Amino acid sequence: MSALHSTRDPQAFGRVAVLFGGKSAEREVSLKSGAAVLQALQAAGVDAFGIDVGDDLLQRLDRERIDRAFIVLHGRGGEDGSMQGLLECAGIPYTGSGILASALAMDKLRTKQVWQSLGLPTPRHAALASVEDCHAAAVELGFPLMVKPAHEGSSIGMAKVDDVEALIAAWREASRFDSQVLVEQWIQGPEFTIAVLRGEVLPPIGLGTPHSFYDYDAKYLASDTQYRIPCGLDPVREQQLKDLSARACEAVGVRGWARVDVMQDANGDFWLLEVNTVPGMTDHSLVPMAARAAGLDFQQLVLSILDDSVGAEN
Image 1 (cartoon, rainbow, N blue to C red):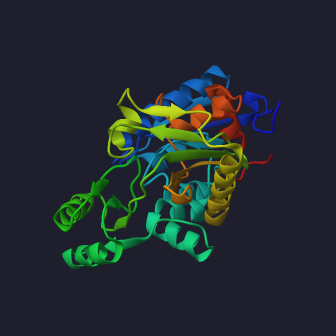
Image 2: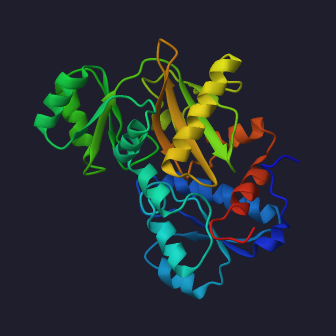
């Protein structure tokens, strides 16, 4: 049995609360992820129950006897360090990264600044807060460009643009989701996503879509999205990609599990886009695919994530 597998008796985890739903723009995805995780834990014999996180969460945490929390909240309120801080104050061990890494990874702009400071490759970018910023970014970065809210996931509010007018419109649309909007240089080439579990990098997945980029529909709804495992790189390039992903996670302080999104340009160079510290766990999700390629089924995957609960005695 590999180090990725949990060797703990499922009943030894105690009473586990699966936290999902919430109020972020990714609520619907989180509901699906949470239902899948909860079903897998219960099937494995874990004493697990679900909490659709709402205004009564503090009362639920106080009322329920909870030994551990499995966080499947995507986006703000669950992936940004706030839930992690609340659980730490309550003395409840939880899955995934700690407060600082969660907050940092949720902020795409700050994450890129950390990577840049360490010499890790990430596309040139700028922050947008006004029409003037849009014009300045167009001059500095050129086109095409990718616009995205700095604190959202699941490609929500993202758009590829080819001129200033489209850039301004995309900035205004992204501002509906986040007061901080990021624009970055468009990297033309294949996209890869790399899952990290318990300190090990899982087999990378190559992504293909007829959409202009890997958007919300391609991630969760489309039937024509392509997932390549093996990813299509030669062994040397694939190892470079895995090493870069490990360094990207280490720079942010990731623990437990995460997923890194990377682009490759025409010269074969890799560019880091972002880190997701609570990746999706739906039937379209990528971490379960990578885990299967590494020899873990979905149930083994969730047990492995749970086994690494922060603050738990191992």
